Image (cartoon, rainbow, N blue to C red; front, top):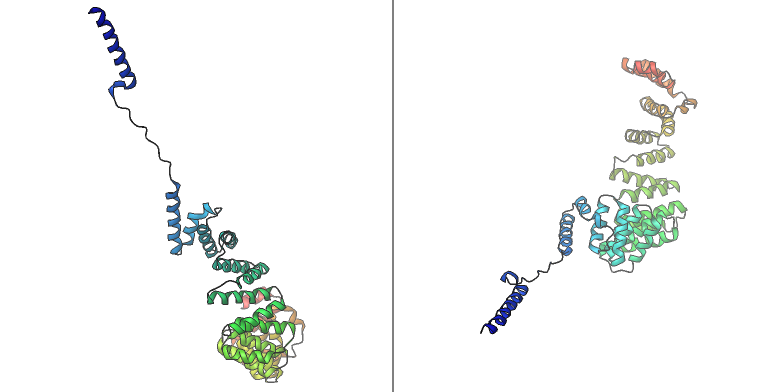
Length: 361
């Protein structure tokens, strides 16, 4: 029996060792946990949602702050939000780059229109016009289609492309007669080229929609004035004054028309209104001072001479036909002490004695 016990003991030891090696410390082998890769999708979604929220609230600075690091991405939505946000904060060149990227992935008309307008307002009218022309073949909502034609009207005029300007502005007044842009552009073209054929037809059509529009009446007034039709010119400039009495330019034209018609008193009254709004035409005021003196309006002559001499001293060398002497006599005869002191200071000022004039005034 003892010969049998030894092999049995060895067998038990070997089995025990095998168990220990395969299952150390008697513990079960734990399965290896697989590490999940970090997902960037959730992070991307988060910043895009934040950007969309800021964009929808009109917070364009925040939108840019969230998306600027991704400005090189080809993602359509990122570039679209960047384009509109850059444009809103007047970073026009950056907006153009962003909209160009949107057009590479999707040719959405709204983005194309925005891109054309950005090129236009940054002075690249040729590119803008071509983009507007591309949009003519797209199906656009009515408001945007009108904007495209208005863009073509403006850009062709700025390019001095008379043929294209006439073509697109004729289309404008046929499609959108309620918009003054086409009419005003055609009036400017007529004035610049000197070709007034068709003017009366244009006026008949335009008056139905734009009798109360300042620009439309103003450019008609200019054309009539330069072509010698002073009656119609005066009528149009009077309409401009009714529409916007604070605009100085129509008063200047009515002054010139009335002076041609020898209605000097009314002409001076209109020029006085111009002077009140915009005292910046020294040569005109110099001539008007002489007219005022001849009409017995020395107070007005004095006002006009003060403006003309202080703005342009070379006028001191021109013949004022006795206007200043007449003003001096008037002040000596009926002026107050303050009037006399001011006149003396004014004379010293225009003669170059500025220190003396400053002490007097």
